[in-house]
Image (cartoon, rainbow, N blue to C red; front, side):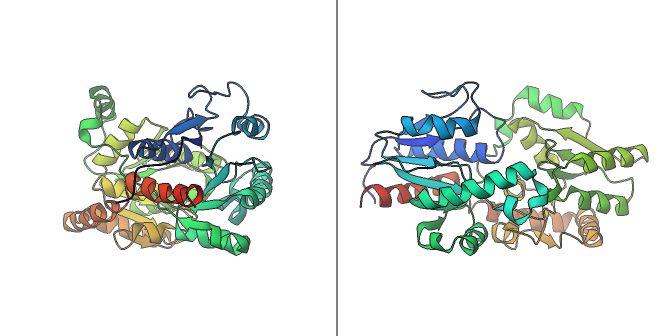
Length: 363
């Protein structure tokens, strides 16, 4: 058994700490919590209001470039968790760890704004240069990173995300359960969860639902994002034609978990994922999953999900129809899913991240 932590508090990127808890913000919260449980002191830097040094109204980019370097003086290690947001210059005596979740702004530039594409491209390249270690959330992401920056191969490591942040029924409040009850969801429905942006390929779900006919309910949980306009217009058109499509927008973690638990099938045909957390969340909740063959999804879902090509609307419709009509297959897929999701815990992610810290600070 490894000895107790022998170094002081690490400086931790909290620039998304006070934002809606999705994606990178969720990663930051879960990893910091488990690191602290392992005895690692975590000093939150850059949150809007939380921590000892909140940035207030200052934008995240400006704060990282102008204020963060001063705050890192004397810190043994700084962990940036947002793909590229390290200072442009090294801080003497401070080790830099960077988490890269995906390279989607580079591999699928049409799914982000032009300004963000260039910010990501230039800042990532510089962050890779100054990082002592790069943590990738999947082997898929690591391969894409090394293809573009071969010099990072020896400094990169894969640490998968956890999925055990999704609480059980006991973690949902009576108010949240009452709210979901008020939605009057049918006994059987298809759920999609995630933002409505272009790369998530929600249009394929709508194509499949149109093939299945108005008798099947689709629930959408997630916020609007870059390029979500066509999806929102299509939802409106389908609803006007009598299709039961229910966009719920962004929801609290408790409401999201409660809706997830009640779903019959979870559909996630994304075109690009650096990890793909929603399918694992569905598996943990015991919901059978249909996902795409793209990105890191096969790596994360293993053989537990039904995988379809992200351009195959007929294939998605057939898989949905089969699962909705077969309780036996739903039960089988749910069992496989629970087993797969159990392999991904935030405690394990924190332990592996702690090994990265140790290797840098104790050598």
